[in-house]
Length: 139
Image (cartoon, rainbow, N blue to C red; front, side, top):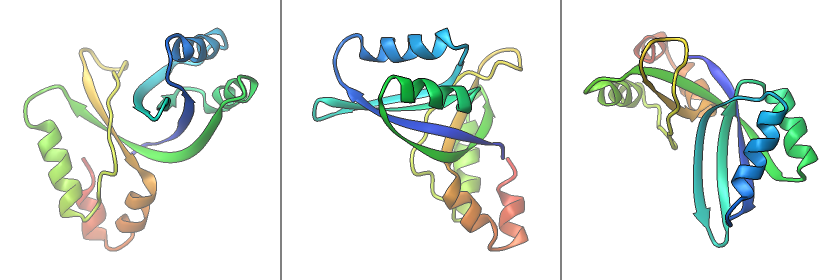
């Protein structure tokens, strides 16, 4: 499964803040590939997977935002009934937990695909347990 850098950014939960951050990324040519936002207690936790993590980090630093970085894996799923069930079942059978997931559009193929993102740490640790489990995780 391909790995990506994910940024978890804490920002104020008020109109215009997300737009300002996204505009700053766009102005530097950073494309957001997947996105998730969850409000809590006057703040939003925004998770971003981008095409250029190095430039994105510079932008986030320039904006003086608090963020963490994590390595995540991406599973590309066809846009048809049962694909998420198949992938989640195969990961579960390999004892890999999906900590959280969100989707984005896959641009290389015609149509839409779900992109499910799971924390890479759980995949890496558990996928070393046996070659049978590694094979089960090939989606």
